[in-house]
Amino acid sequence: MGGLRDLRRRQDALIEDGVLAAALAVLAFAPALSKVGAQIGDLPRRPADALSVVLALVQTLPLAARRRFPAAVLTVIGAGFAVDQARGYPTTFASIGLYLALYSAGADQERSRRVAAAAATAGYAALALVLHHLGSLLGFGDYFAFYLAAAAAWLAGGLMRRLREQEAERRRLAAEAATAAERARIARELHDVVTHHVTAMVVQADAAQYLLESDPQRASAGLTSVSDTGRRALTELRYLLGVLEATGDKPAGDPTRPDLAPAQGAIADLVEQARAAGHAVELSEAGERRVRPAAVELAAYRVVQEALTNAMKHAPGARTHVRLNQHPRHIEVEVRTEGSAVEGPAASASAYRAPELPAGGRGLAGLRERVRVLDGVLEAGPRPDGGFTVRARIPAGPDQE
Image (cartoon, rainbow, N blue to C red; front, side, top):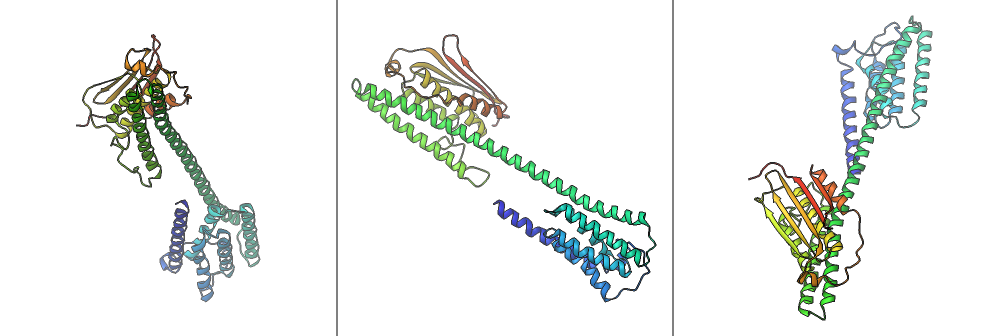
């Protein structure tokens, strides 16, 4: 895409320069502009002839290539201007082409810029000597003033060049920052999806293995849960891949559907998955569920997902309470894990040796960043009874009826 944009940009520049050169060539013969232009030497005037017409075209038409070949265009136009001045032809608007060529050399010359500036200065010095030899009465101050005007055109081009370079650097840094942010976002999404589902599958599989002889029916149910969890993981991974492959502004799929992009409605599925893994989880909701931006719903989902994942990894069998409180302008999510395992089915399902699962060390940090981007706050820390609490407040915008 970048190469195609550059090609179109160059094509547009060629068209613009061609139009500029043609317009300047036409205006060079407009009587109203016959006195407007650059003039040096003050030699006796001679009437216009065929050569003066050719020189007028030489000082204008090469501008069509001013951005592609700035040094060559300046050389041609400068030579045409020098001959025009040495011949003593009347001033025409075509001589403005000299200033445009100087500007383009300052703005678009890529290599040997100092050499080009030195060559242009030497050429002007040679023209001044020729004009003086031909009888010009101008003094050093006059020639120097004209040189300063020409140098100003060159420096203006150089300033534009530096501004373009700074803008290009700013865009490059912005693109790198956007790429890094997108990579971090994708890493957080993959961490949330893979860590949660794989943890649930490991816990469910180990529990099924433990119950295989003592309670085959529950072991079979646990294996079914492993299968369901794997399908859920594949569904979410397909969604993430669709986001990565999307070429438009919106990702492939509908991010508000729980079966594609997780949302508040899918939090109940997380609770069921945790229960199927032998974890005692209670879910309570307060307030009226409202239509929220997809990013807000996904953030609430990820908070619950990460907290339940940590509970299954570090406190198997401990009772966990998930509370979702809906407010008109924000959502409050709290996941509280108690410090001791409960008695009953959940405890017996988790009585096997807890699986040694690696800690990624980035789940809560990623959650804080996700919530912070939405101007929310996430707090996480241990409880006095030895449990753990994760609490988030996520702004959700104005009430949407």
